[in-house]
Image 1: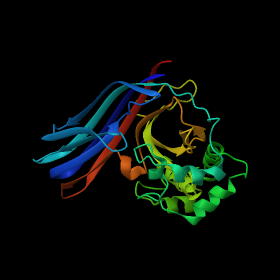
Image 2: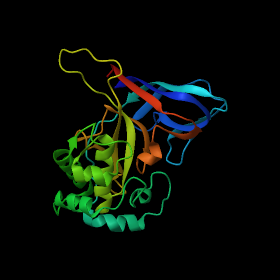
Image 3: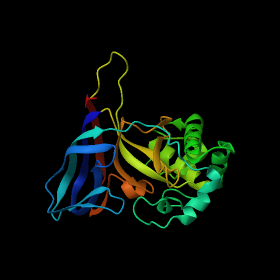
Image 4: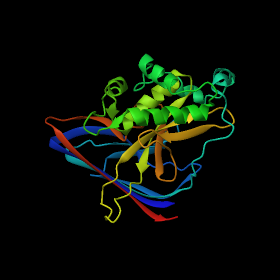
Length: 292
């Protein structure tokens, strides 16, 4: 499937900001199963400094800064993406009982190494309640891939999607205790569950094609950035991706932007500036399918 993707993020400041330095992570990845045919990130006003680079995990990062005062900043991403993934569970995933030995034998510390995705991270703590929940979803004869799906599906059944329940800074433990949240919360909780039982797991940010109700036109800007989980199934099977918010394997409707240990590695924008007063922000995403 080929998609045209457009993302617009705008910040409006109550008073001019000075000396802003920012890091943006919104450019889709070119990787197996996903081909970036064209992409452009425009920043307005034009920054005095800009650096496009690739981070440790292979994500496309843009750093930029303003020296003079500015009362707004807007980012516009336009990209054409070919997504080729046909989701399926690997047949060679290792047994859960064999996971500790497989990880102990692993010596690679590159970006794809599962060893980076096993310990607690900034947004994903070690939590006894989440580990107990994960254990309750398992059967003794499951392999790693089956366990990943079982835990993701259990979260889908027990959690409620509620865009008003949490903010970007809500801890995963709080969202889990309340059993509601958004895709970021679902993903962080699933990662904690998987790591708690010894399965390496990480965070994926991206875009998800959404379909309008039957007979209704598609709304401009109605899509949003999305998040899901990738987890390691063993040295032969490698990684799979699961979307606990929608109880499905990530497939051709999921467009990958970035991968990391949790949201803090792949947040769309972060930075610092001198400012007085408040700010307002808007975000709009369009994911438009062009061809099969």
